[in-house]
Image (cartoon, rainbow, N blue to C red; front, side, top):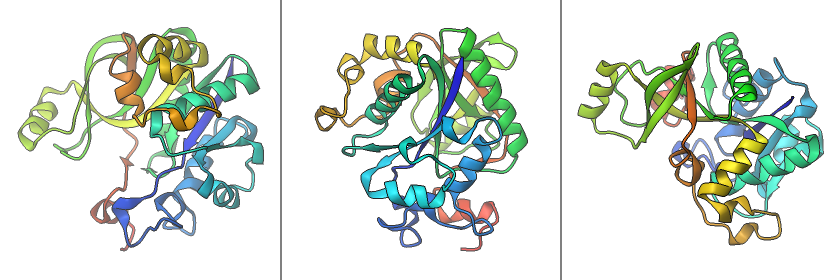
Length: 267
């Protein structure tokens, strides 16, 4: 089965103002040896996919800028959102358009503005995620092994093991207070929700049609009428078969100046 990946690059980077701006949000900042977070995300994916199988989902404001940062990317692989409607309509539109282009396929979705220190381990985990969803009718979300009681992230409660490394997601949990975050860390069966996904296109279509039929009918023509809702709220929290792999690859969402300093950026 063909594999594809989508880099979600429509964010405005508001948490890093004034370092970022509407014209130059976080994913385009060249903070790492002259390379942007978007470029680093693309480089990681090129370890396992050809450039033609990588897509960028962004809004029209950043379509040209995305191509300037990624000269290897085919221009037709930039999927520009007709309007800002959060991740559920954007991910649905991308999945369906890629399926039209490639036929039935396995698609992953990754943020454009996250930092990953151990690229080899990330590539291994993503490859394992592809392999699992190719042979199982599950939606996959890659979690992060927590190394502290962090109140800035949502959490995944993990259930039974489905296959080697792969566990069922029992529940999605909103950002907790410190006491609950410490409880999760002690319990050991939790992961940070990092917003990384993988699934077969037909499984995604079926599950979305079941729990969010309005979004399952998304097209370019009706996009502005779509609700503004995240993929977690619209689909992942309601779907009966969600799996995760708990990754440990030095991940950060670099959403604050403190987080940037932790990964070695002098700001």
